[in-house]
Each structure stands twice: as C-alpha cells, then as structure tokens.
Length: 222
Image (tube, rainbow, N blue to C red; front, side, top):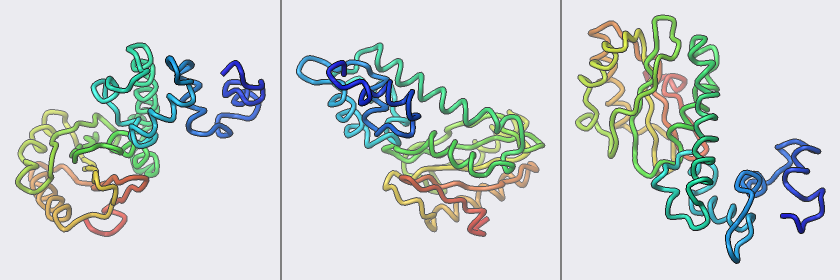
C-alpha cells in the first residue's frame, strides 16, 4: 500500500473524498492493513470478499467461517467481527428507543444485517414491548422452515418470558430470492393465531434475501 501514490491510498482517499469514494476492496484493505507473503492487502481483501460472497456474507460471518481464510489471523478476525457487531448495535439502538414502525427501513436494514448471507435458513423473532420498541432479537430455529419445524409454543413461551406485547417475525432465504412462499404464509398464520391467544400481536413477517428484503405486512399478507 505504501508503494501507491498518496492520493490512491485508501486512508488518504477516504479522508479527502469520504468513505463512499472507496471501492469494496479498498474499504476492506484499509481495515486489514496488511496482506501475507506473496499476497498484498488488496489481493487479500479481494479473496475475503470472494470467499464470503461480498459484504452481505462477510457481515453474517462467524469466527469459525473466517478461520480457514489464509491471511486472517486472530487479530484480523477479531477486528472484522468487532466492526460487524458495532454495525448491528448501531442499527438496533434507535429501534430500542422508538416504535419500530417509526423507521420501517431501519428494521429491514437491521434484519438484513443480521440474517443476510446465511447459508441455511434461520428463523428469528424481534420481541417488542407494549410501545413496539425492540426488547430483543432472538434466533429460535435453523434449517428448512415449515409449520412443523418452527414450534409456535416456543415462540409463545419466549414472548411471555420477555413480557412482549408484539413481535416481528423474520427469516432468510439462502437462495437469495426474498419472495415469500406458500409455506411462509401458512407459518405466519399459525404463529399469528398462537400468539393471539396470549394477546401478542404479529406486526410483520420479514423475508430476507440477497440484496432484497420483503415485508409481508406491506404485501397485505398478514
């Protein structure tokens, strides 16, 4: 990186023109700082993004999924994971301070960050208080999601334990297509009926794909 003219170095470029002026590899290279023998930092950044499937996959990465990538030692892995967690907390913070539907786009961004890029389906629930502020997001089920693999009694049990007044359901489609399926509709109706018995409202069911997030409430499917 030191061999580049000053105006082409990611740090100087960012400070002069803003972070949006940097390409994906430049942003990641700025964080990684160094490569490894025979591979400069830009090549390492390119390999990481290719291996993870871009930033969406990188943001969903785990310590285990990053460990096999050559050039990412413990320090670099820890830094990447810390940045991801800061992004999640930054998006969650306003959802805890105000009703989630004061900022529906932020809810989608938050869930896309949490669930996007996963290799298997994950079903999560945003548990909300009586004013529809975020109490907690919990991942409850993994794998192929159907009415039989997502247990309404477990969702009800967690809602009661947290004192939730409403929920937003969410899951991802590893295929990348965010279009809700018939199974998603059946599952939503089943959970909505179960939660209604304990006076907990289902406000939405969000489906996260690759670069796309669909609200079933906006589609009139609740």
